[in-house]
Length: 231
Image 1: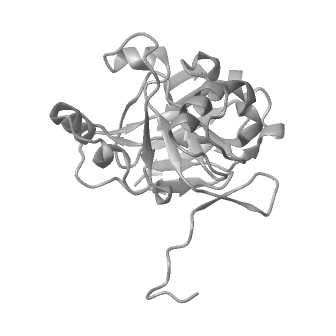
Image 2: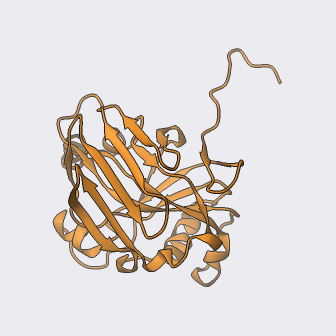
C-alpha cells in the first residue's frame, strides 16, 4: 500500500512474560467511579456512568521495572494524577451483557489518567468538552498488560499511588461504583467494543497536583508497579 507520507506506528503495549505486544485500538475512561472521589469532586451518589476518550497515542508505555518520563504538559499550572486499573479488551462486540462481559477481558494493567485540572475546570464552567484537559500527549502512562488468567483477584485488590514516597491515593478496586462487567455493558451499548480497546476504570479519592521532578509510583494488587517521573 502506498502513502503520501510514512504513517504513524500504531500504539502497542508490552505483555508480561511474552515477546508479543498488545495492539491498542481505543482508550475509554470512566468518570467519577469511586464514591469518595466523586465526593471530593463535588458529587454524591451512584450516578449513571459516563465516559470520555483519550487518543491511543496519548499512551506512555512503561516497561516492567523501568521508570517512564512524562514531560510536564503545556498550558497548565495544575497537573493532577489519577491512578487506575486498566482493562484490556480481547474480543469486542455491541450490547454485551454484564453476565457475559468478563469473557471479553484479555488482561489488566496499571494506568494513570493525567489531567490538566485547571483547563478541565475551565471547560466545565463554559459547558464545553474536556478534551484539552484530558486528551493530550503522554496523558495516559501505563504499565505492561498482564493476561487475565495471571492477574489474581485484581477486581478486589488494593489500588494505591505514592508521590515522592508519600501516600496520595489508597483504596481497593472492590469499591468501584460501576464494576468492570457493568462498565463493559454500558460502554458496549454506546460503542462497538473492539479487540485492543483499553478501559481506564476510574480513580479513588486523593487526586492531587504534581510538578516537574516528582516521582509517581502506583500499583494494583500484584500487577507490575508503574513508575513515572514528571520531567
